[in-house]
Amino acid sequence: MEARSWPYFDPDYETNGVRISPPRVVVDNEAYDDATLVKVDSGNRHGILLEVVQLLTDLDLTVTKAYISSDGRWFMIVFHVTDRKGDKIHDDETINHIIQTLGTKKRKELSASDLQKCPGRSVGVESIAEHTAIELTGTDRPGLLSEVSAVLTNMQCNVNAAEVWTHNSRVACVVYITDGESGGPVKDEKKLNSIRESLSNVMGSDGERRGAKTDFAPGITHTERRLHQMMFADRDYEGGDQTPQFSSLDDKSKPIISVQKTNERGYVLVNIQCRDQPKLLFDTVCALTDMQFVVFHATISCSAFDAVQEYYIRHVDGCPLDAEGELRIKKCLEAAIERRSSEGLRLELCTSDRVGLLSDVTRIFRENGLSVTRADVSTQGDKAVNVFYVTDASGNAVDMKIVEAIRHEIGQTVLEVKEAPSFFRSPPREPEGRTKLLTGLLKSSERFFYGLTSLGWRSTPIA
Image (cartoon, rainbow, N blue to C red; front, side, top):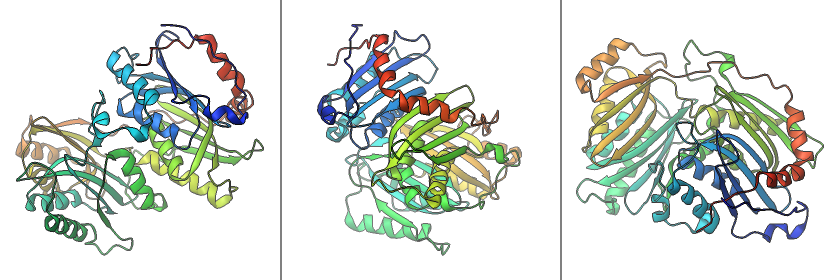
């Protein structure tokens, strides 16, 4: 790899924002033995951090450390990333995809075909040209997924993919369906209206005080991004302790989140300490973006069990933060983290796909008193590959005798028990040294990023 030397730029210099277009992207496999460095240097604009994090998430890459600075009109970020096995990235296709996607094209210019070429897990990105995407939000209850899938089966629709999240008694679901007759998206307006009306009745059948929503998603849908947006819009973060918890959970299982105003340029310092979990950085950046906050500086560090994230942020409109705003930040970040923290027993189903399969499986769950707290439904070729997290109807651990009876009915080799929920195996670290860490970053961010040139900024040439 060729070493490159970078000049120093004053972050407050007003012409800095246009000095790099498109962004300069570097993938470095030589600086560290245990991780690949992904470095992005570009003119700053709102949302660029989420775009970069979302791309790495779609490629199933894990961010173990990150350093972010975007003061002024420039943006620099350094990620330490590994693949799902904890190894450095050696796949040329993945490396080229990162460089070309972030470096040679603006994300707004990406087509559906560009997104579908992602060499990682692509189930999270679906094209409306191939499916009809349905978005559902409402009050969660046992058997809801069974009722939704039964409606779609009765409408002669096949569920090709779906993702369901529940949190604080709320549920958000994105379902991708095809017409059972044509095998493509549902185009008949009468049928679409009938589907909307039937699903709206199911989602609002309990007379909930907060109105349920049923919508068809236009364009390209990034499933997990939409789920965060849907649950945020549904204000799931306002829920109390309505959802029963397993007895093994206690207060230590909650993320430790602190919010404080600083004297540095009106920044708000946010510190998050919690158990490390897949896509944690994506979840927290989604929450900050949905709340209309801009990240100016940040450091991210993950160990085997826990993670520490520290952000210097300001609201896009520059409004100062009051006590109510501080509490809202804590609640929204906690909700974003907990949405993916699946409660229940993990069951994996793999069998030949067919119309009505999801309806049949979830009906059996419901008839045996199981409630689905989270689901990831996908189709790979002619195979249905589904993951369910289940509890009993009260939210408690399921009786394994019931699970074995269900496996006997569905098929021992079709439905497998994988694991119980992995709660905090070690308590989060106490927030000591928090201010010292990020204050040092804030006051010396220019020197820090200038010092990165000592790593050589070796790069793979941009195609």
